[in-house]
Length: 181
Image 1 (cartoon, helix red, strand yellow):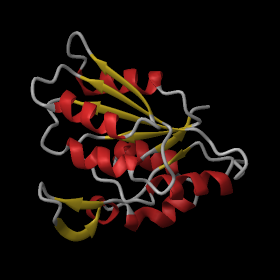
Image 2 (cartoon, helix red, strand yellow; image 1 turned 30 degrees about the horizontal axis):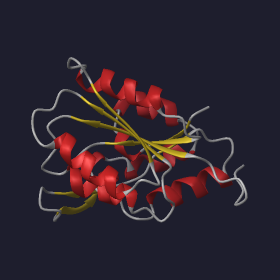
Image 3 (tube, helix red, strand yellow; image 1 turned 135 degrees about the horizontal axis):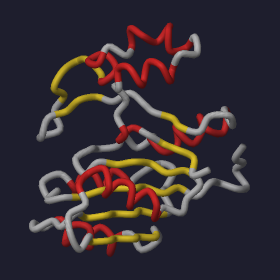
Image 4 (tube, one colour; image 1 turned 180 degrees about the vertical axis):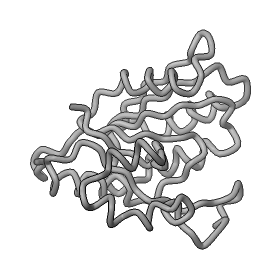
């Protein structure tokens, strides 16, 4: 259980590849959290656009955050790149981030508070709204609605989480907060 005296260290594992179109907005949403992150680990998979300069711009604005920016010498692909980013995170709680997301300001606070109330839980995932490239809602449905997960919540709550996830694979990694342990 985390206390206000000993707040957990929060890390973000962010992978990039030619993400300049949306990356700045995502980085600003991460550094603008109500519960500020302590560390941002970015693994860039050989971008050839302005991705790295955008990262540098936000990094310079936020020297209070520990930044670990790695540019891969060759392309690892999405899965291996996330594995690398996760392995470099040092925080107690790690948040996964895609380069084209936008976090609500309360994301880290809500997930950390959930972990505080549920010390037996090691991974938290959230619902999400679906937006287009201009930040406009694509649908009135949330991610859970669109994937049919909301209809399965009764079964989920009965203890069959693992079975449901392995069958339908509808959880979005970019909504995850996970304990380092």
